[in-house]
Length: 306
Length: 281
Image (cartoon, rainbow over all chains, first blue to last red; front, top):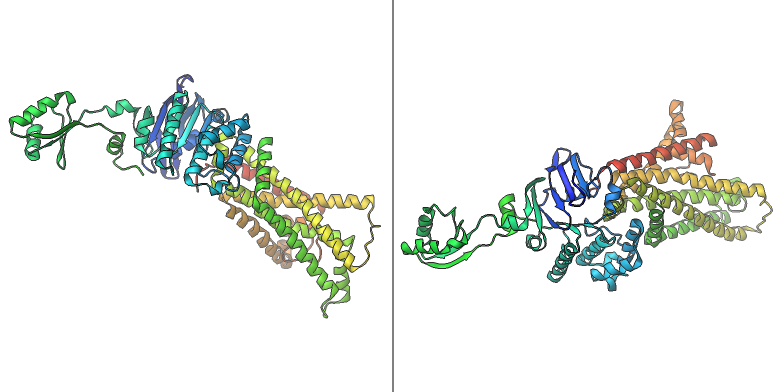
């Protein structure tokens, strides 16, 4: 069993089957206190089902899930008191105003003051529209209200399912900053987003799942540092590929149209240049290629997100 | 739990549909009572004087109280089915059920708070219905002649209180039934379809069973409608959608049968809601 000071979430062989379909298959993930954890996967990979299980909305078929060291099957009410969740953007009453929706949630949760309601409305910039019916809100405003609801109880652990859905670029940036600030405040954030650039910017660790199974899990830094890569353009690309493929200190050589990708440490750039020059092949461009989460995601899942 | 119930009551009060249902109830009362008055004031030629006198008595006190209670029972049953189905079913449609359950984790509290608040609204609805009916009948009774109040005694008032209690009690099986269907189908449509479908189909079946004889004629005693008819007075015009009640069960039988319906349906809703996953539809 995980110890509370370190682990906020720990799942062991967590499985959910809906009839013959296995939505989550022996999932093992760990989320540590104070980190912003990205949970990535293609549509239908089991992300929402996993979130549903952590929130007690969906019963696991087998395996265990502990939050704050407590089993979700045994101590769900105690766990939920410490969690704030944005599970979907439209989980509100359309005929109530944004403010009344938050008041209703506050009444259910208990211990939330009116001042706190105003505070979270201010935080998501909905204070001026707080008395308007939820049904009149734009998708972005609905999403903001969802985030406000998640933060209402000042939770230790925040679960956000696609928090930037429907937001414009400025709104996305604000939410990104908000998520980063939650991490700085020592809160643990579990972020499900298909915007990999966004995840790369705010998450310290990620897990990528495919067909309900974790295909990789680790710190963003470590995952992106896997395999150094140089990207070059040359005068004679076909000949260059032949020459470079014959060098045993180069891991792999891949042709991408006019570009050639070399699996080699960037420090050996001058050696690459010298080898090519000796064969009268001249560089027109050379740069270290940065790995992105998107590249990693595509490599591991074999499909684009969304 | 009290917070949940208070929240539910506030939500229903702020919902436009609740007030539309109140208007529907008032309009229904007005149509039924004034149409009846129309029959009394200019009866059709083929209608016998005895029937006309009977109808006239149903619009004058004290007989009018039976008319008010039975009319209230009929319209409230239909409106309560709609209110219960939409109150529960829309939680699934709007996704708000996830918002609530991801904060509490004790599911039975959700079911109980819904049922308690809906029963409370049924109680308010019944009071409003009786006030509406009383005011309209008072107007009509004055139009038919002088109104005498000498029938009001302590005993009569006690009977009225008892009838009020039975009328409210008779709404409970339909609240439980509709809630069950709304939870089962996870939608308002399922609740309305199940509740209204049962109400009308049962009435047809009761008519058929009553006319069949033999053991089939015993079945209606175990259905909801005939047991309700045994507890709440039915006037000439409002004894269920198809008007035939057959031999009614005793009050004891009816109250036990309806209580069993309530307990079974509420228990089934609780177990079902506790066991099932909350997934988006």
